[in-house]
Length: 186
Length: 397
Image 1: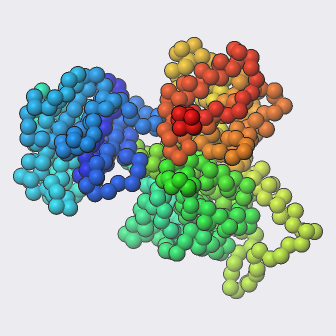
Image 2 (image 1 turned 45 degrees about the vertical axis):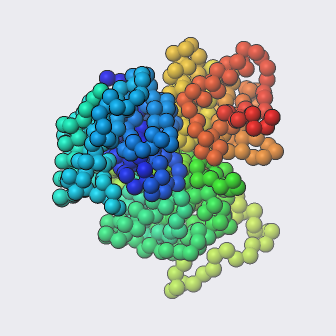
Image 3 (image 1 turned 180 degrees about the horizontal axis):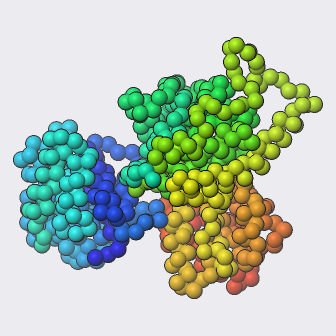
């Protein structure tokens, strides 16, 4: 396991990529690790392709420069594949995680590992919506936890419940748990 | 010892303002500062901070309101960035020249045109001469720590000058990292009670007086010299405040600069703000490659860390200065200042211009700058004009 994980999130404005990045960092922090949650540096619009980043390490990260060669790329909306190369800069044998009903073998990314989770389906089943769209970000963090092992499911669920109290927190933690248990790795 | 939370740089400022029990906040929004004053508004709304929150119609008014609050002896705070700071500028000078204690957070951002919301230091450096103490923060922890310390420094009777705490746009303002937040009771013991300070003259309807009246040439220069005396005192008070802060938090700030692996170095790279950590990472990599190099972070630029820099640089073979700013027709602003401060030491001082308008300054870029310094030592060729890092030269063909 690398001592420094670098993660890039792709989604659309409103899908909560920045929040996903922060939940991941807060989960790591609960385990005594260090992290940086980095938004895309710019003006964001609902529906437009957006990205966010995270660094996770066992010790303090001093650098603040941007992430060019992530270990993991999480894609919240696979339709983004039509407009940008989500594997850009991804490390050799790096991990691509898609929110999709397809199987991992249906994604053609040579030189990388592919994992797939139906985060939209999980959100719809639990009735998790944000501004009319399925809220997929908490499920995606659960999926990342499973395939990378950089944080535990328990930490992810705890940080989610610390962010949203009551039933919303419970449902989002449940989304992370279902994603954790259902992600398929190619 | 307090609690730790994952906070953006902007929320680190807001938490520091709450802990300092600021009494008056005057606010006008501007990207990328807005979430500072939004968060403070939330603290005031939910009763966590008992402050008068004034929603003004411009940055100029925000500073004017802070000056008014400060003149009555209240603890005042505002935050701004870039064009907001420039629009506020007239009264920023008034606050510094009038010796009004207060703290302002400035999120560094390039001035337009072309339009930009990303980091550059020219907005702050345009206000380098107006009597404000100016801090540059490296990370979100330093943002919180320096903001708390700034109230103590600003209100010290030997200083009584306003303080700017600056943090780089997005790189710190919107990036979240773990931040250790001190206990309220520790901060209460560290700072004087709000509103308790003894200004020489307090605005009070019961004892009316006028501030800022006409000073004839016979009296004027002494007002200026008084500010310079305060800046001189601030050097000592800043170090004292940083040491005392260490006693409540374990994080000691005992110098106006922060040297990194400099004692045996031949070459030193000087920078400020959020890229200091990348410079330190580069130093470690260059050291492994056999380069005897160190880095220095400027924590304050006013007062200028004259003695500290001279002590560190005295026996070096070359100094590099990284400016995220530019003075057209001159060069890097800090390059010029540092070169002047070291002039009698006869050490070459190479300037680098990097990161304008938020262009990323990567660890690799600092490595290249470090190697360049060694190339200059080995080739024996003296000083050069500043080197623009990652300039897309093909645009000019």
